[in-house]
Image (cartoon, rainbow, N blue to C red; front, top):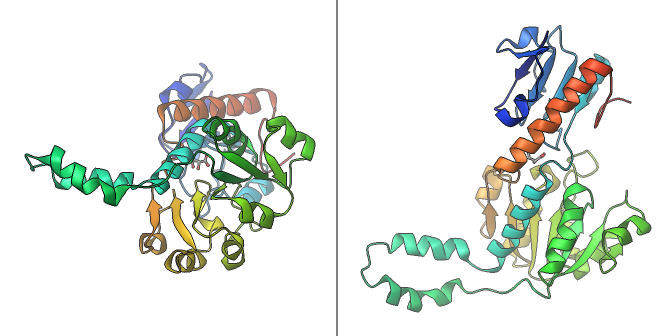
Length: 306
Ligand code: MLT
């Protein structure tokens, strides 16, 4: 009997796939496998029985990958399982930055007691007007599971797309979309894009990639969307870009005191993958990966060893 410990809430739809050879345990010390979402495992001691870790999600920056590999413990993730949810929220982020939907909704709440709210709204609405996304250009950095899904979705909304990904060949880019402009120099993407969206992992190479130079290369009034990881953006550079009016908005799914202090930042509490569908998909994939590994040694989507 294998014992599985959940470090975070894992969807019951996924846990239901565990066969009779498995049982859940509250005691991490006896766990053969750990299922985790965003709990930080960096300072944790590795339980003596642990044989595998599966992250119900794509990002693995909350797990000490090398330490696990040295202990012979594979770490799995679930690429693509929540991609649609993140794609949908990124599109919502573009719309939130384009029109003051948040300000308008807030105004309605604040004027809830006004018996003539219908009339007052007609007068107030001009302060919340904005622009449309059709005919604008979206620059997508990272053409993995999420970036790839973004392309047809925003093209269907009438947007133009510029794509960048050093791990994708021109042929692979053309297979995603013939009409996407594929670039190998990020400056070309920055120079053309009204919106720049990040869909790359948090690694030492991507840390602070949106810095003063990147922002300087962007169009006047560009919007940066970050539904990937907070560390990709140099917060000081972003604060300058917004304060100087170079950027119109920064939409981020990663709250911290620095972004909360930025005028022009729209901040969400890491909601990208928080949908029923994504949570079920991630949990199912993670549970299957654990069972496959424990029963057959198969490593599907292992991120820390061959
Ligand atoms: C991911 O890494 O899959 C997303 O950011 C969502 C999450 O962290 O669960």
